[in-house]
Length: 238
Image (cartoon, rainbow, N blue to C red):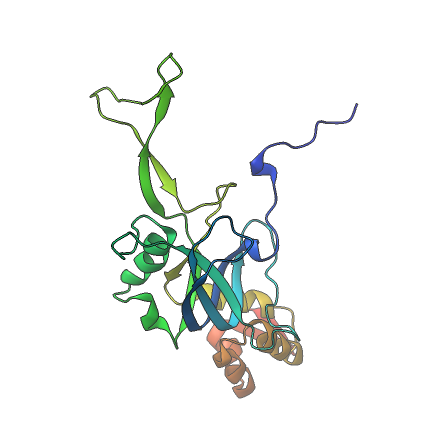
């Protein structure tokens, strides 16, 4: 007898652009536009665009892929936020644009547009949007708030996640420069076992946003800077 098929949302995989967790690129545009025709209803979105974009991390066991292609030579990457205003023309609180995009920029003492023209690292995070009361059936088919032992409403967090519980919207995080330990660790992992020619190709393709490594390789100082050794022309851990 064959097994039953998987039926839970948690068993649905995430692939392609939806599986991207963290990127780094040059922030070039933040625009308000009409929402795509494929979205339900009508409204506007904020479209964010980066260039020289590289994928730093994916969700699950997905492998990062190259954004730069023949049809996308500048490695341009865009993503959207629903953009909602109140009747008074104020930004609607508790939206992903407010809590994720604006909120994360505020943590660096800026508004998002002040990052335009800079290289930024962006990560999808499950930030709290707002809270709603937990509801239950009162026995008559009517929904009523759940109360705690003190008679207060029990609140449920609404996070910026998709149906599978994965973070859905990018936030500003500390920029991963060439001096960042996580970046250095990735470069070390990529170079071990390669000769200088292969290492140069790897740096030009996978770490093109960090030209310092390429310059150090050409200067003959990269191995020492990363704590590696070169044995018989091959990079090895020191």
